[in-house]
Length: 280
Image 1: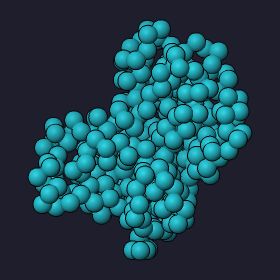
Image 2: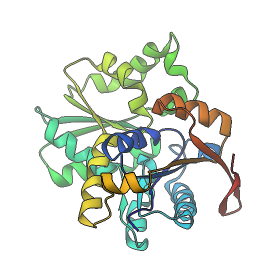
Image 3: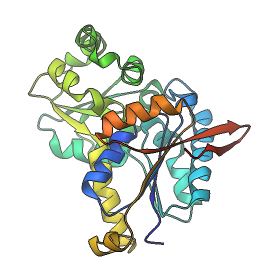
Image 4: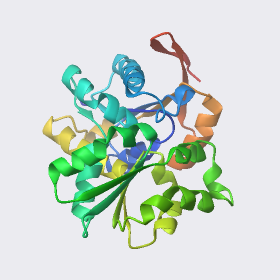
């Protein structure tokens, strides 16, 4: 069981920011990732539809063999985390609880902002989670639907990127927040742009970093951690699946993870089932 990989699921590329933290913090662990690029973005979709997609991705990884599941997607966490935790016989981790705890620790003026997809913000999952833990804070949510597209298409490198981000965040900047949760795993890719717009006095919370802290703790708690000696005997592996264009995914993933020669594989959606179609 220890030698099985940690499974990561996401609507597209964003979950790779969580994987990157895993590779950094847990170098002895293997990774199995699937990005549902063919149906990305999840944010504008009804949560019931997102829940169905998350279940399909989870079943795909479970059949491959994983020892823990990380929903590396905020909308997916809001839609399906509790159901998956109740049903699956392995530990399941989402990205919302860890990010919420970090925001509470960080804030000084008790004014926390959250940016995310339409689905995440409309669910009010961050607001509920944060206030349940500390009821004297104010949480301001803002949907930034264009950010996912900017990341997925590489628009964050355009000359108009800062202006677009400024326009999108302008309603939140009036709220005097001192802490901002990047409530979508795509957003850390554009962290520099966001920080430049909100200014140095606003602390940014990357839920991916906090999530892997939780993953590390749970691996130890359930006696699932691999040691450096384990890694010497059986090298950790990283395998990436996409329901979208495999060449585009390979380019983006290699760039974001700063790694070459990734093992990227293609899978298809047929009805309610996701299956592997390409071993190259």
